[in-house]
Length: 272
View 1 (cartoon, rainbow, N blue to C red):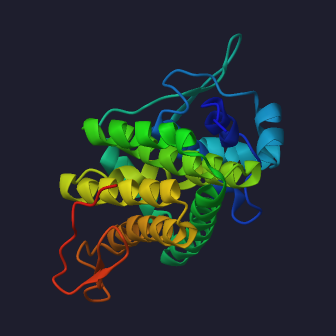
View 2: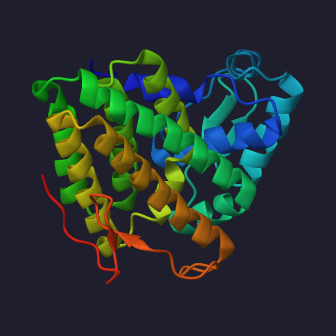
View 3: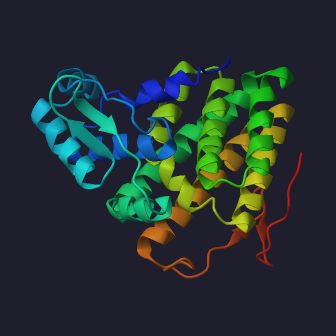
């Protein structure tokens, strides 16, 4: 079961959550721009259509577009041929993403982590039960591309694609849609944690271990590994949000990519 890359773009324009809708629209569109799902110079749908697609009022949408204009991510042109257009501002993307991360509360990040863990863990368990070895080609392709790229924006896109493809391997359309939607929410922020080569090696080892467990039909192991992958990434985001890269809650027990606790705190390179 393969997913059309257009599914990720379409998820950008699905209804947002009911709480703090202006902020939700700003995050949704802003992250899609940072991920490259909406290209520089691309025209957004008209206000009435875009508001309907996002499930918000035109007043809410206009407030969100105003915030995006203030961030330099959207420009509005008047007159014939006018509308709202995507603009990618100059300057380091990491600075913009750190500012975007600051808009999230710690409670929101932890809640998102819990939900993403549940979705990815379930997807991995079902993939191990349902998929055939030949259906893992997309996951292995993403693993190889993640290994080869040095661009942090590409890394975040490929990381998110891996989790979407894992849900697709579970042969669950609903889980796949949920993973796609999660990537529109948090995918761009992953760029902040995937820039370190040392951490990238850890991610690669965990992804290899997930593929291996799915290939072997080890459903409980696949679930645990996928959950740990998400938990580790979200923990790093939360540490960044707290402004303490080494953690504000003291040292956490280290685990190798196969889920085993290590007294030495070192992470193995992993493999399948």
